[in-house]
Image (tube, rainbow, N blue to C red; front, side):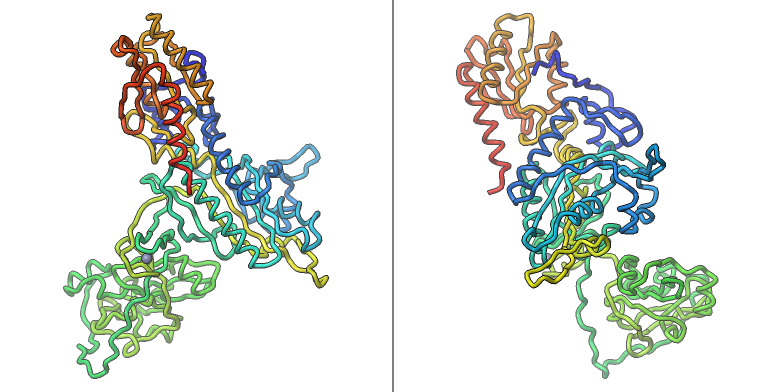
Length: 579
Ligand SMILES: [Zn+2]
């Protein structure tokens, strides 16, 4: 490809609409252009990157025995009504009507349609298992599209679905997909973490997220370098605290009321009483499916509402109003405590809170707290559970080592759906004994276009993108510094055509531009290898070969350069290949 002809309009200025490096660089390198909010055109270079990621995904899916299909973007409302998700999906779904007034949507995902397709065709255990996948455009009407293709309204996804006779089969296909994902993201050259995640709207039991570690990530993660445990903080388990010292002979301070006039916050109370925030227990009142419930956690911790919801097994959870707090505790907001409260409401205590000795708690009376409160002596709970947010620095729930925190971009997700969709849609097969059973399903997504952005977040500098070889739009740039010098042009053209002959993806910058302009574009677009044909070394029959990643430069004889660069490309590619 010739730079003079390529459709890659580069920009010198940082576009004001773009907040994060990947969005800025995709615009500046001429990879994408915005059509409307959250919808983008992929120009030549952007399209090549997307196709390369797709090809890596396709190879790894095929390697695990998955079969490629292609399902429609336009789907009938009827199948979504069968699972109840026509209403549940809400405003994120692009809905439309055909000329007959029939309701349709642009598929935000494909569980319904793939399940219905299988339902109509699969009858017998002999037809199972199957893994079907597609690489296809999805539509989600995001309330706030942002970060370019990172969170857009039209995007390309790989979605795969497994169909098995039983949970054992599901486990085995889930492991295959897990392995495929590890290989995909290794090959894309990104530093990824696998974390346990919340299932959200899709549902199902076990699930994992593949996250690319990045400051711009929307998800907060914790992970353990010692044992590999990782989780989204929404989901991360806290380590079971050491058993409390139950020595009854131990002299305790004894519970007593202390005056805390107007002091409602953890900060105010602990500094006034001169105790650490871990010695104070917060008692938060919630409405859980319409019933008041109290949650007790340490003053230095944050309650995790998702965990509290799961612990209580409720659908709706919201903080109680000041009126309800007064009615239940008999005191204004800020003075609620667990002592005596169990007569009024169910109490859920965090397992770390109940081991705090001689705690400070609200007195359920205005302007007062109780000091010296102990679980089992002064108060009790209906449920003791893990209901707090885990933070970096906490002990790993698996091995006890210190957890590290990071932010991540979700690029892949694995779900064990079980029989959720097959039961709702009546997808059954006859087993060997002629008995009808629901098909057991899993689903597995990779955000293709988001992965492109995540790769750029992980690989760039102030000058532009630094593509890993596997996903670079082109592998090599040949740059004659001065196109009015015949010898430079002649040598560059020869190298260009030889590299093309070796099957290397090569661009020649044949533009009549100053070297400064050419170097700036080369850095911005991020060709991994650059061959510079300039006056300095031509006399010695040599050209400069440099790597975008480390700036390393070497001189190579013109006669050897094509073979040499081809080897470099192969070496870079095989370094990314998992063993
Ligand atoms: Zn660990």
